[in-house]
Amino acid sequence: MKALFIGANYNIIPIICLQNFIKEFYFINSKPFSKKGKKKLYLNGTNLFQDDDFVINIIKSYKNINLNLKIRRNNFLKFANKMIKIKFHINTSIPEDISKIRYILNKINYLIVYNHDPDSSFLDYINNDLIFVGFYGFCYCQNYLCNKNSIINRLYFDKQFRKKFKLFIYFDNNHVQRNYSNWESFSKNPQI
Image (cartoon, rainbow, N blue to C red; front, top):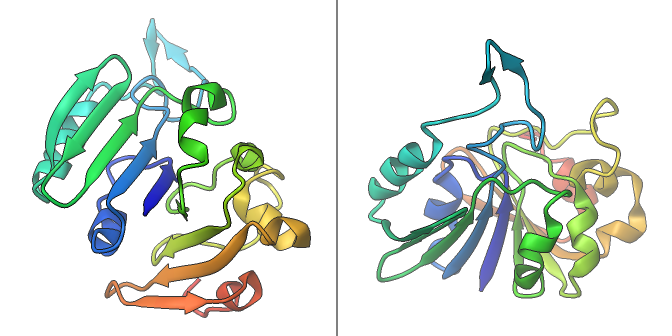
């Protein structure tokens, strides 16, 4: 089984919760270039959205859970241990850089949505029925001010879009897994 996580940042909770049944993770993040996709904000010649310590912090976070850096090349990092692999694409923004990750899209079974609600356009390239995975601490509620094409907004407003997912999983603050057969029941979870 394989999972995709756009906006992965330094998050290790999805790895901890899913490592027993997902063996390969694909993580995507627009950092270190910018925490706002392709946007820049300069002050005195410095891009304020840039995160120069991003890669160092990922390496430290993953080392804490016994994942070691195996490959570091351009905008690609690969971490592994005996159980799992993480292929991490950095400086990659969705939807602008979909071409960089198209090779991944029909390989995935799980979509992790946590701490970031990505643009849903990449799902047009996926033919598999997916399993949506959410976590405690992130709001899965309607947001009229954000991207109307975001995954969560489309799940609320587009019934046809919901058919892309065969199951919705939620991990609570104790990392206990709860399964929901549809978006309606997932979104009514009082913890969300």
